[in-house]
Length: 271
Image 1 (cartoon, rainbow, N blue to C red):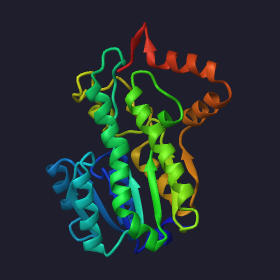
Image 2: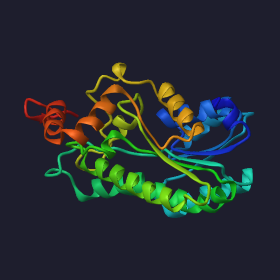
Image 3: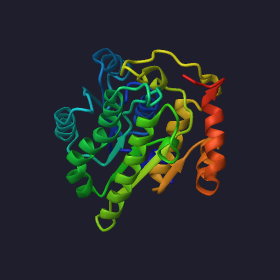
């Protein structure tokens, strides 16, 4: 199916649409003729996005997805502006980089509140409209939802929870005509590593990983939209991502060693 034909005229909600994959999704959806509602936590980034697309079918709202009330207001406002929701892409997320022995409980709680409960809140309040329109619910997960990653324990926990919850929801929705899926980008250029929380629940602000070797956010967004249009069950991106999922399923002990080797250098966690 042609992506543009599928999304033309549809109302699509993208959480976390001011950076990285989320912003790329917003841009491509607008080009495809969709009516897009997005949110972010920072007013300046929302303002900049509105300036870039002043005459388009774009609705923006400052929203912290870890707040149930913020999510409710965002979804209600979207339905008021556009009349309903056809597709919900739960993209907003945050990561962490800290060993569990060093991390505060607040780090784990913050990651779960945004990555898991943010998806639950937005989906719950959008669900009646999506059921009415026989629409689509998408969760942007991660390879960390298939394979626990050292130094990212809270992040992995949130993505495992997300995928299990979406799988349950997909089974519940089988007779409702609602499509439920999750997508797992590999390493992609985005702001998530810079915003990742350290052991004290503060943003790292930097990363040692080479983003020049990662998949561009625009390419990742294109794959996601193609998968949605073709009603894929799941999507795992990049060769490294596919290999990790395969090895973890069939050779878990080997995967343990390879993942440890990747994330630790000279006995220290890669930040």
